[in-house]
Image 1 (spheres, rainbow, N blue to C red):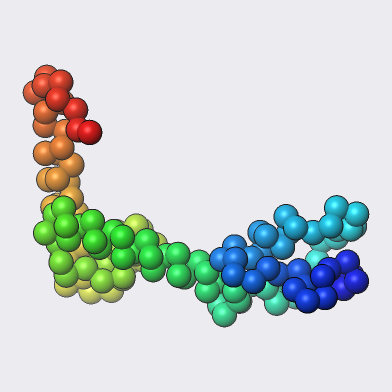
Image 2: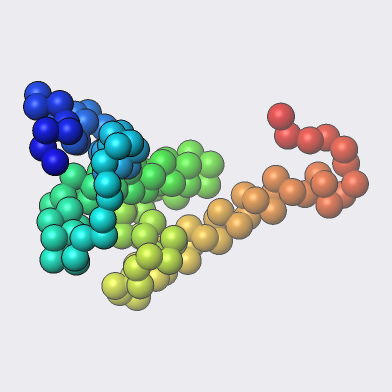
Length: 129
C-alpha cells in the first residue's frame, strides 16, 4: 500500500543502480506479499525500465574494460562493443569481418595467457605478483 512508503521517496530509492533489489530488500517487513500477474510485472520489465538501463550501463562499462585490457595488454585496438559481445557469446558475428576481428583478438589474448603461464610450465617458481 502507498501508505507503507515514505511519500517523499516512494519504494524506489534515488541514485541506486539496482533499484529493484533495493526496493524489495527495503520493503517494510509487516507487508503481505503476493505474486503478481505477468501483465502487471511487465511494467517493470521493458527495455526502458530503470533496471534495463542500469544493466546496459554496467554491460557497456564491462565492454570498455575488456577493450582497454585487450588494447593495453595485447595491442588489440580495433574492437567495438559488438565484438566484445561476440567474445562473451551473447551475440553471433554479424559479418565475416567481425568474426575475423574477434578471432584475431582471441589469438592475441591466448598468446598473452600462454606467455604468463610459461614460467610455471618451465618449472620456474617465479610467480607473478
